[in-house]
Length: 587
Image (tube, rainbow, N blue to C red; front, top):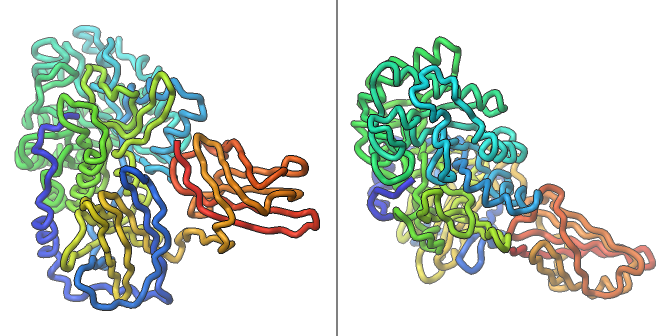
């Protein structure tokens, strides 16, 4: 939740050198053989032009150049299981001012394949700091209720569970894991939910195991299966005003081994352990020491760390093969925070995702997905947030953090593989390469410079040249997959004949050929050819070349971005003319 690590900064060159050393045993570089050189497609975001279509990049045969990135799909690293986020009550209250379509549009921007494609959700067990500051803080605030007779998910049923149901309607295969910020306050050694340490007497630990089991069972009854849980968020932080509780590694071992494992085993609970959620201390203390216990290790499905990358990932996947490593909470500005939502903060997030991906991470978890215009927590401090909804004007703003994440989540599909990329000569700020399940090659790359960056990408004996805008996030998709969904090409080369714009779900376009036409059919589709909206106009309604339509998408609201507008006109003789052009939608 908080940024207790050093300022955003990475030992980038060292990191890549280490990876290349590990890879040096491979004497042959895989050289993809393409029947024909595939096209690549560029998507770029700058502060003034976000999610902009950079067009098609034609591939050519390799020719020697000084500065380039080589992608070797034969050298594969970790599997990218998917992209993560966190459920918060502030998300629910922020979107509650919107219409049903407006709520769906915001959530679709996060969970849909046309948005960030978030498929893993961290669910607070009880109250987190970006929930509302109101009682009950835990799921059982009834003092010394060791039998959990007063355990209740009533508060969750009013906000978190309905929000999850909205997300499941968009992304039916969502996966979940639970994380408590604080056990019930009477389980603290000082009786306070915002400080102190967990009590280690047997009755308290037995009751806490039952508490976590009831959470898992209650959510399952609501149609939400918890794949994993952890016993505590940020166990090394014991002060700060919001829900928290102190633990030590020996306390983790004792609780998991002697209380939670027997409880889950006896009752047939298959939920595993996510070993975390950590923000501080050392790998040896919080991973090695705990995983040395065989019983606990058998329960652990994922190892993890939060915030800036501490290089735990390579150690974890080396020491525990077959157990993936996750990033469990993205940094969202300094603590206690200032609410600044500028491009530099988004750039730091973009870089942090890259650093974790370069260090063996299988799931990256965003923190504040949606909040209101204040970006404030339930306890009053402000942080960065992906999307803001103004509670007065109902305006929705997609902040730099949103686009920083979308450049990964939209393109890098679940079960993709991170693959080797090497930089020859002068390289860009960050570059991470992936191989999607369908065979497409994805390169996510940043440019922090004040000028454009001329990028050459090499795969085997082929190359693609792109120009990255200044201060930008970029994704290049090389459409090598045999089942790839190709970016659509325009059917009509006379694009200048059609001038169009979309603002606040209103489409405006000028097309002189439309004047006097008998019938007009309009299709708005995304750049993969999927239809978003269709419109029709005929007879006396076609009075001139200037037209306006209200767009009501087939599913949810219209996301900002670039679309393909197709206008088919039938004149009075029955002849049909088709004109197309790209059009940008803004809110």
